[in-house]
Length: 390
Image 1: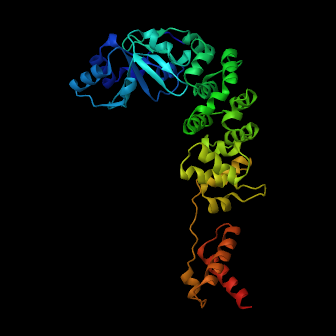
Image 2 (image 1 turned 135 degrees about the vertical axis):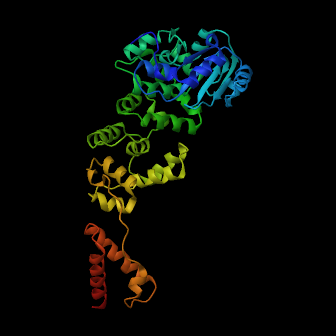
Image 3 (image 1 turned 180 degrees about the vertical axis):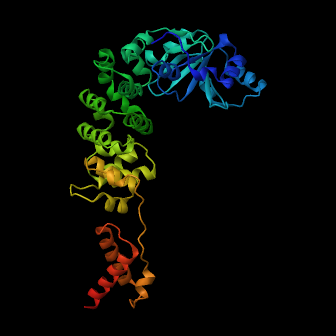
């Protein structure tokens, strides 16, 4: 790992123009973009820190004709909307006061002050936009090489400033960390786990879902359980069930899915799934999907029949949580039942509940036979009508 950043995105014409507008001495790349580039990972979001005040940033962008949005102006953040993607530009800051949920900040003039208020050493790396020189105030490069997720300064103090950092720690540990984990970080998270109760359930839910969407969060969830953190945010969870699901996903080449993994963590109880969905402030569609997964049973099912009833997504959830083979659903398109009630009426059945009953009966036999063609459906209908007449 080098102590210089040589990212291709740094050479984008729109980035170069932005740097020129802000002034090289006034701005540096910071945070995730620097970290991920050093780890040779895809860079999703590009952030810059600047010594300029927000109104100066806006004025310079306006003068250069660069569209900008004051996305977090109260905290000094302006987003430059560039052709290659948005770049968040935030004025250097230091914390004035914190209460574990929000911070009151003041603008700063020293890069180290800005770095000191960040959470982890690997997130406090700055890069010169032209030379690529890395500025590392707290040993982040060393920790990145060692895959150590470590709080800046005193871990307990960092957590008291923002209780959500407990969950952020475990998310970063799952994504970047190695073993053994940082002892001080784990001790602080365990000691202060109860402070998570003071956060909004939406923030807890969002951070938990971000963790569950990573490649393999199961070892981290087990450690959270051991440290007493999981019991605070999701006491119903069974980490071993998540381990089994991740194994099934990997063996069948199916991408991680945070909601499916949440479903796996929970017992097969619809009411409980609905409670957790409400607690995490999930959407209506997510709540319905979680409940569908919770309605699973231990009885074996035919994958395509299940997918016809629940949809591909719902069937995958149940099959993978059960560790069943879902390969028959690859590229399978759910067929449309080729029989309408009018056809049954046309054969002499009076309109009403009996038509619906016959329709369901033929459909059930059609599903059981593996979705045969229309000719077979007509034969099934004739057999149903003949049995009715007898």
